[in-house]
Image (tube, rainbow, N blue to C red):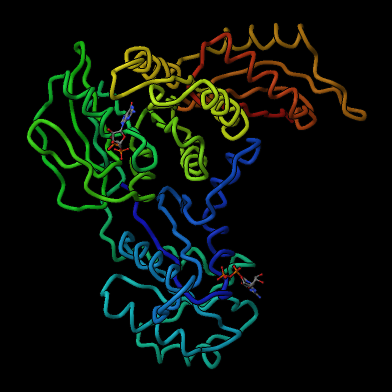
Length: 437
Ligand code: GDP
Ligand code: GDP
């Protein structure tokens, strides 16, 4: 599981600027998906090969008694509770404030690993200007500039350093041949009901529950000779043969579960429509590059009018997942579950599809013959051949000349073409252009 870092500090010290910096790499991956609304509070970061989750907590006033500040304080406490380490951000230009003292007191009592960083320190001499922050009693002060991207590498290193992280290759050892499914969705959409229906029918393999409450648990089982692991996000606890949900929704747990799955089922609730939180979870899934299947549960409980409305919402709010199959199901009445299961298997296969260079190249040439890319100014892009640059999700690398002039519309055309030819329903597909020099 990825380590989780929470950014804490009073308003305006530069937390969201820092958050954007730390999560930038992933932004690039999903930049061209229309309709994606992102939750600006949770993101994935990467430094070298080390990946982590960042939480931006908004403004924090630990002593707030009422109103919006109290709510923000509660949210911050939850984020801090879920984090492995805290990055406490202060403003090097504004200097030390009473609020900083309050926050420092709170963090000191918690006893979590904590790194103190003074932002907006570009062009400043260390020493004098930062000395006052030592008063907070949190040890060394790291000067950074989120706006200019200075000092961030050291900051992340220091935040991750005390966490005793396992070596990359010891992590998440998966038995070969095991397919990992995660069921993601808001509270009450019917995740536990669905999981219990599936698991109730199958042979459960004995497993140990990890000690922490934050990490998602994995339930191994077998179905038709195939081994699976169901990664739970609902905070399920085993109670005899069934599972019951015990905890409230946790974004961190959802993110962790998505990351460790091969295929993610995003479950929606027909009686509630597509909510902001659904769209955010969908965004996390897209960002992760995982194969995905959509299911609208409680289809039994809505009338024709609600059904129509729902179809429209799905089209407008989740357009960026239109490569995924959609199922209308009732977990309670066990309707539509078999086709859903098949779609999940199909999505897994699609994500792992092998595409040989000769076949890709032939299909590329056919696509170009059918519709040539438009000239852009003096340049006419020439698409020569293609090879598979990765799996899970599949990446197709197109080689040729002047490919930087290929329009987005043409890239989408190519994506559709390859999707159809290779039956890539259920997996994101990346097409990269590589111009030979
Ligand atoms: P938040 O409320 O803590 O999330 O703070 P924001 O990220 O919204 O930043 C508050 C203000 O500080 C904005 O005007 C930013 O442009 C500015 N800011 C953020 N980082 C830096 C920095 O490294 N240097 C300077 N000079 N300004 C910064
Ligand atoms: P979770 O929080 O996502 O795990 O949701 P639960 O599985 O606990 O379900 C929340 C509520 O929705 C419970 O009262 C279920 O009985 C109900 N529910 C689950 N599936 C269905 C369904 O297919 N149709 C209807 N009408 N209700 C359902």
